[in-house]
Length: 235
Length: 296
Image 1 (cartoon, rainbow over the protein chains, first blue to last red):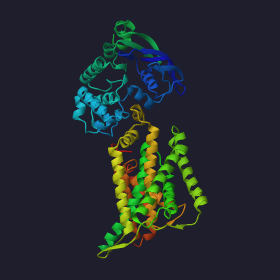
Image 2: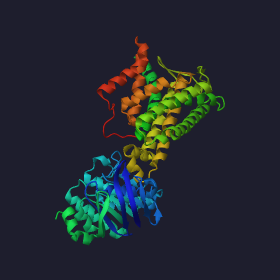
Image 3: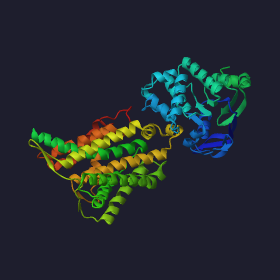
Image 4: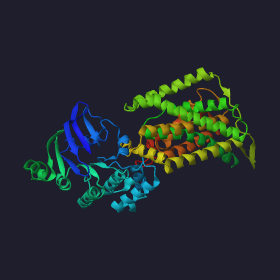
């Protein structure tokens, strides 16, 4: 479904990604783990067109999407729930969700998707008329995912869904992520600091360090790998 | 008492025009974070479009007057979009200062281009609507003042409706909050920015017509002073804040009118700038400007 080949991204003189290659098969959850500044978020940003790669190629459903701006990818079923959530704090929860379906003109489809998002995250329905800026961190994360779902994605780039959220909520959000994958067949490329949790829900994983892929493999084998255990899973 | 009411009506009809212009400044600031100094000259162009179209569209009747008004708005909307495409869009990722200086350049171009094209001398603005004086006791209200108020209120309500009840308006608000997130949900930011310029410039065009109806002498430099005062109004209300711009415009119009009615009348143009200095000293975020305000 998604293939990244030899991707190199520079921020000014700094190389953020160096020759990164990865594959995400349709219907799977694949995770990128690694420390701060390893290039996880940059990889997602390059895929969704927020940053222009210096070299390399990104293929989505067999099409070359390298350098295509983000607003043109949403309509192709590639959604990005970004780092820091980036909900529209000045809009209500409902307006945020409607903006998620910005390209969808069919009101019946929007209503159906809205119902689906509310069923997935009932909290959002309770807060529908509230400004998004007044939500808690966990609720904002639900909203960010819900907003991305409104575009009916086939593939979701999900950046740090656990960041700054109470542990109990993290667990429930991850359950939803797995559920979306199982019931909707949603393909997910997950970036996560919490490597343990990420590898539990994924089928395949990549370990990034200073902009390079240093390890890749089945999630189960990564969890068993002594180097990964020591560096990312707390021994 | 009568004089107070009289001044109130005069002030409101002047303030409504400032409000229309101020909204354009504040909307563009909302999406691009810079002050479009050419905005006041779009206002001037609006007057000239009215000047040239009035004889052709049957000005002097209500329908003719409205036709002139809407034509000027449409022409200014188009002009705003063209200015944005040619002058500002190529500078999208440059510093705000670069864009600001470009805006001053566009302003000079329109002023001097206007002097070349329309001639530098003031022209008498034709009558657009049938004119009468209405008397309420000792109070005298001209029909033009009522038209200014009615048109302004109508346009403000329309604007509110567009910004809050339509898809593109919601996209404007989303974009003004976070442009990156806006593009991630599929919003074509360039298209929304164009729309914002069209909307703001159309309001400036309406302002140009309404201003010329009440101060019926137009010239290519006429935009400068009302433009600056409207800019002050936008800052007074809280730049980026739509209700703030409307409120700021009304306040500036009222203060200016009341000052004109006193012995300090020669200070009427200075008062707006005194207000600017005070607001920047004591409440730089503006009257309605907070961290969590609605911005467009």
